[in-house]
Amino acid sequence: MDSCFKSVPIDDSDDSRDLRTAHAQRIISKAICEDLWKPFSSALAVQHPGLSDCLSKISDSLDKSSQDGRIANVWTALTIRALQLLQDGTTAPPVLESKKPPSTGSTIADSIISKVFRSLSPLISLSQAETLRTDLHAVVNSSADVWNYAQASGLKITIDPVLDRAYREEWRSQQFDPALPSDGNDTDPDLASNTHPRVFTLFPRVSARIQEALPPGSFPNFEPTVIHPGVGLPEWSSLVVRGKAYQEEREDYINEALANVLKEANMRASGYRRRASRGSSTSGPPSPSAQWKTGSAVNKGSKTEYE
Image 1 (spheres, rainbow, N blue to C red):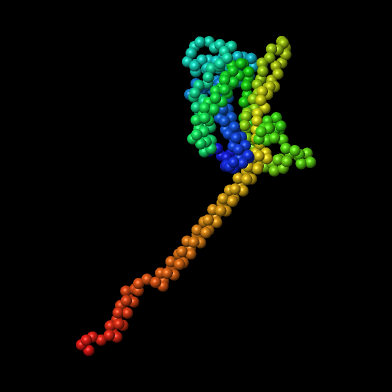
Image 2 (tube, rainbow, N blue to C red; image 1 turned 180 degrees about the vertical axis):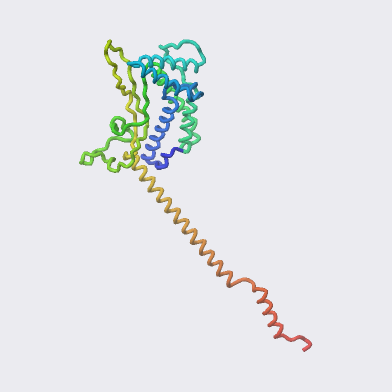
């Protein structure tokens, strides 16, 4: 199970539901970024782990060798289309106007879904497993379609799973981290106990360097265009802090209750041993030596018929 769930209370409260939902989104997003939303991702690249890195290095080298990056973009687009053709097992030229892009193959989808299930399995009932698997397949296929088109379009797409704390207002989750009213001192209430620097990425930041037609002598604009600012949940947000505090309080209660049960069990065991010890010293048959002495005394005090 994912380690972040250790600080999430598992109950029927609203905070528990929101935290579990947020972390589920984070796990799904992370799996998609690791296996799908990366340069030259394809089923063929999954079968040959070093292929994506090799193709990325070639693309970067071409990008550095040209002033506007056009050569790298064209080479990248053509290479991605070739990977898709190899994956589909066909040599027919791609139809750019097609409404349905090539699939990334079941290998990537299976890898992503397996990662998600490994992290969430303790929270998934048997009745929910099949429905969740079907929904995840739909999400992965949709993500693959978008990524295939984006890569083949000639854009330089960058997926950044690390969100900058300075731009919190841009990636703030309105569902899990809505802006709170100030306390009168123009400070954000949830920043007062800011001791946790992590930001949980529920959706990555997506940017692209768009190739524009420039007049001769003009310099290209290398500043990327932000397509999506991302969605995040900071560890110092009110929701996360409340969840951690409640979970710690409940763990302390459980530990104290267990300690009391063990203490009571030890006291009962100790009392039983004392009673057993006293009982063995005041009862039970006499020893053989005592029986011999008693028998001798009786014999001395009695007379036989011959006396």
